[in-house]
Image (tube, rainbow, N blue to C red):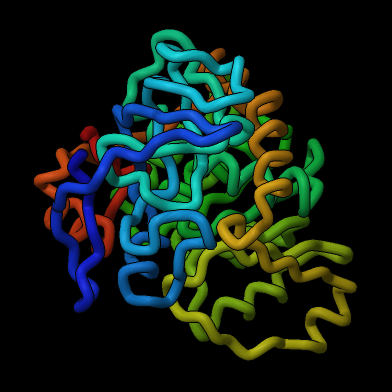
Length: 318
């Protein structure tokens, strides 16, 4: 099979690899779509290695495709089923072996590009906002970096939970596209970072950008509010205004999914399958696709991934 491979210098190439064989409890998936994520670039730089048991030099954290074969002990899903999954790596390829308990069904009629971009962003958003920050109807939520893949999912999960959402997007030309994420009858505010303080205080702030001044947003928290750190592409260190945090009796949560145990990931997959996939099926949430690429277009794909101005997901269509 063909697969993207990380080269020793941190670049990417396409190479031939032996087709994987599913073991007990696993399924072989023929990949129709695979999302790109910032973690792919971090892995290539050596900053975010793949968990044990996953290819160390093949990026790709989320896939969608058809079951080609299953190992012993797997009765559901079955060959021919349309599935998607958040995985530990190896997704930027034509095929991959996935533990069956990580697989979720692809809703009938959903385009492959949307399915391939769904697992990572909506698993991250559901886990951070609902399972950890405990978002509730009526909460006021600020999402930074809201035009990116995870940002668009955070906005939609917050809205689906009944929250009032402020989406912070540095580029004003993307504001209308971000506003279009709101379902009929709902609205959300799209602002630039320098306008955030006009819309607080917030019960939950979702940090998807990072940077040296990001924790200054703690001053925008409501008493008892929660600050959730999910992405730090803009910088991994920032001074903590401790007195502001103390005055607000605030909570800071840092979270990532990739390094969790298989059991934890299986529990999350089940929660997303039961609670979020139905929203996708009913089109109450969607996956905005910025652009799609073949594996041979990997240079352009990763360049676009590293650059600014994206709205939604970049997806390989192997």
